[in-house]
Figure (spheres, rainbow, N blue to C red):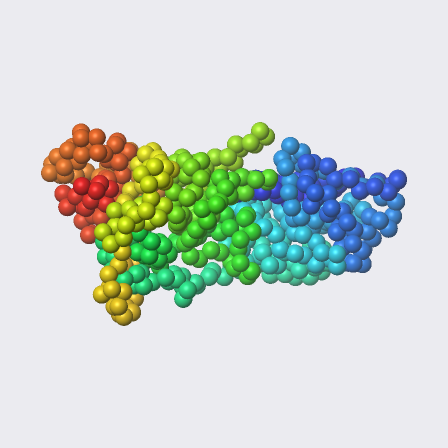
Length: 506
């Protein structure tokens, strides 16, 4: 009689229930796995046979067993080695070597040849699935137990081996459910860049403050050595701490991608991703086989820093337009479609020309007009229209560089930003968004009311063609953030004027 236990598969970032069915009969020795599994699953039968034998049980190779394993649903691609444990347990039930009730339990884990369990990817996604479908118990490798236990509604049992899993299931061993231990690490980390490291550039620092408070997009332009990269790297030190829900979102991404550090329960700090300009479109947007999140998803709720912005391939830059606008990226393939979250702050940095000194009063630009034109042509109008704040970062004078003060500016600025974020959280409590940059048209109409003087100022720039419709709405979002930093309930003329200053050169 066939036996059945339950496991799960990762599809995108979410888990989907998988039934592991096994039929064991006597006949010519065979071990067949069907159900659209990859090479790792095909190879699992060798690991399973050795692990069962090492656990002092009768392995498939020791008898003339004809074994058929079905992973259902058969039209969902299964990948990885996490099915070793459920297949082994289903075989032991079918061959009458053990007896336990597998209902309302989810099994996951890779087996080593001696029967030990190795950690898996995506433990948090599996725990979320268990909670969603009402599965009461999740049995998985002990190394993943703390991560899965973040979902307190699910009983998480961490086991170290196949023998220990059997002992628990047969009630011979008592294992206490895992209690989650939340991390205490928070920014600023000892290795993070304090904003005081940047000498001078007060105008740029103010822009960085507004960017962090409202999660806006920012673009730095200026000659090499002015501090553009250092300013961007200082941004994480002033970002507010992730709340629990945000941390869950980020941890889920990093868990599926296999980027959680050893013994790390959850991601405690906002991501900062800085891919090189040779990055491909798939590495930035996500893709591959199987589909995996790209840099824009790994930067979710954090910062995506693109240094040498025009050096990125034009197709790569243009593909940023939709995720910047919508906060997600949908990747379609012939057989399935996956949507990854991408709520990130885009920070770009660029020289004014290939040599870096176009418009500099101190140094002469050696680029031809065609080189400058080609360099700037990569920055298309539609893409740049999606950036909220533009900042010129000039060269720094000696007097500023010689300043030896070491005060911690980041902590002071961070406290102001956290207050502004609290205001936004309360404002959008019923709107399912977190920050001003996520506002859509209904939110802008509701929360960005401004006085008559501000309306006249905006009318001047819109009617002259210097401000697009998208630019107009982005100005209002930035002005709303400036007002929040000032503790103002309404947007005033000064807030609009400052927001315009960061977008328009005149």
